[in-house]
Image (cartoon, rainbow, N blue to C red; front, side):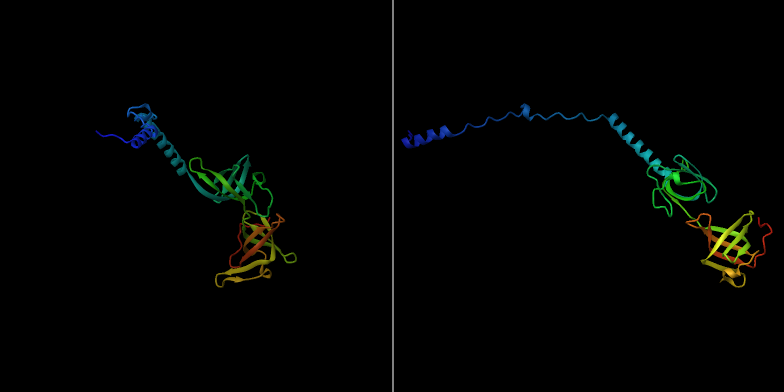
Length: 243
């Protein structure tokens, strides 16, 4: 028979007193181990509706992008009303320009505020914006007032050698007074000699000329000739009658 010594018995009793009780195992089917309920997955019909709605939105957006393209035009203002500018382009087609709060206006020589209210009839402008192929209108993003050179073709009706000006009569029976300055380039064209340099002293009355001119930035009534081309070989145009 196996017996414990007094010391071993005392040690065994102390070990049994301080040893913790083993944890009770949790049953596998307890409430804490049950999976939490998730959202009910959408049905097939609801998912198809979402896909079709997304397809329709994408198709609509693609169609809108195909209808709009960037475009720029140059023309003369024929009417301004509200947020719309009507322009006659270089081919005499009527164009409709819409402006909004994002449209930016500019004009040469104007440093302050400049907007649609400053655009007047007869002003030449350049427009860059979004062209709608369906409505055939342009939503302007930039509107710039242009000072395009004037091309005058006619005959010299008067030469003022004291004030350095010439008057040119055109086919529509109009007379234009042009200032000839030191910066003006005067050329003469002939069939034999081609284009050659000339001068103000070579300009004669009843002579056919082509003049490239610009409006003076300060005095709008003053037209300055930047280039004068004399055409001595071309006879006088019978349709041109000085006013």
